[in-house]
Amino acid sequence: MMMASTTTAHGSRGHFNFKSLNSVLKNPSKNRWNTPAVIGTNLSQSRASFAARCSSSTQIQDANSSREKKGGRQFPDFLPDSYLAEIEETACLDMAASMRRVNLTPNWEGEAQPVPTSVVSTQHVADDHAPVVMLHGFDSSCLEFRRIMPLLEERRIEAHAVDLVGWGFTDAGAAPGVGPEQKRAHLEAFWREELNGRPITLLGCSLGGAVAIDFALSVPEAVKALVLVDAQGFIDGLGAMSSMPQWAAKLGVSVLKAVPLRNAANKMAYANNDLFA
Image 1 (spheres, rainbow, N blue to C red):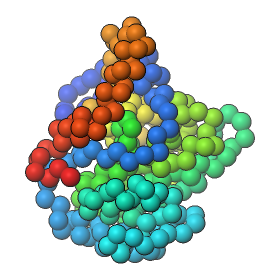
Image 2: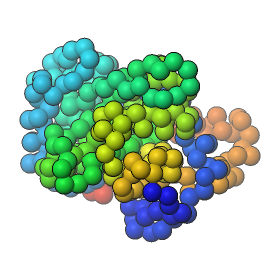
Image 3: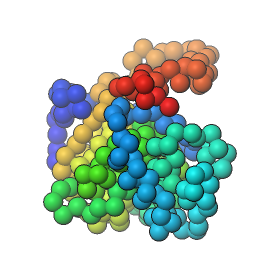
């Protein structure tokens, strides 16, 4: 599926710039929680169904074991207690309990090493639609999709929210890097090994949108449809920021790390601010 342009989630047509992808995709590993919302709606019934599935220990497919904590949920051992202790939102806890790891073997240079990859999936295996693969944004994880996953479960849609290599709770220790080539190889391994090479509907938010663009161009046979939500990769490089002095860049990063600012940005992401958690 070679594309000169693609339809975004807002329905517009956008031409993407390939030169900017490298700078967009090269990001350090940040094994941490950061879970902005992607949808604002009443999910009580869908969430209850999803929570019931999460409570079953048979759904925890970690290579080791799971442990019980917070409301009787079973959490996989690779999720740190210190992070779980800070989470209060029910939807986030439900999805965390449903998280599992799969060992993927990406085809990158050097000896292939298994990469434990964190993912959350619906129960259903598609026979009438392309599986949906969802890629999160910058400094985030698959928990971004905690509110939409119950809706997909309710509609019996096969969907998988994957932690990109270098982010979330995917272990990047065996990766030679976390740049665009490694992200592409990692996603291709998930497509081949977990989805048996079936064509997918690929959805990417922000950084995940840049990864999705790169993957659709590099492995066109894998992507039946491409959905971009505020995707990066549409501009040439960093613009004016490319000439910013190092001291100013460091100051900007320190400001962006401020918890009040990040909370305010997260709240702005909600369609319904009353649902902010």
